Amino acid sequence: MNREELMGILPHRDAMLLVDEAEVRGGVAHGLCHIRGDEWFLRGHFPVYPVVPGVILCEMLAQTTGVLAADPETIARFAPKETSLDRLATEQLRGMTLPDIQNESILPLFTGLEKVRFRHSVTPGDTLRVESVITKAKSPFFFASGKGWVGEILCVTADFSFALIKN
Image (cartoon, rainbow, N blue to C red; front, side, top):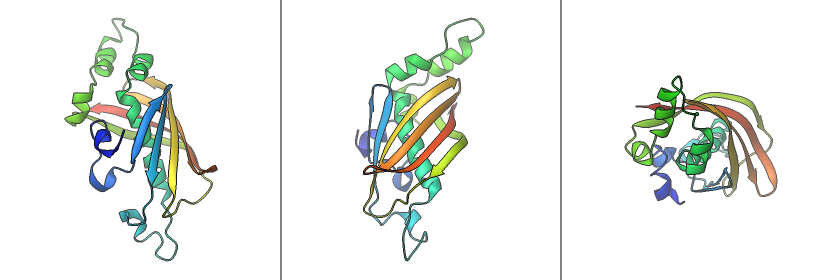
């Protein structure tokens, strides 16, 4: 998916859409984030030696994970089993469709970051290659793990959680 297609899945727009390309293969989200050097977050971080802020790297991991929300296999894997007690949760998760996301009636919100490690700087001219997976879910919460590399150099790792909230 290119940026235009990503806008059909992710609610982020303009300067906050940080992923340039993404796809899902075998339940794993793969994304590319090209750091051009003119991004708003590099202007003051740091003028002499611009470095992508760690919180932005975490957002890149999360946005790449967001493409899994539109993957039918991922949705089926994490949708709760239908029981009388889960019916509401099941309907909420199964009710989260691509049109809902496109109409911004569903928002993915960070709920936690754990085990975050920044291992190498990401700078202008780099392309951050991201891989992430959803590890478990308890609607509306999802738990994920992600990694980002520049070339073969591991730059960031994190476990994180988010909730898909009806707006």
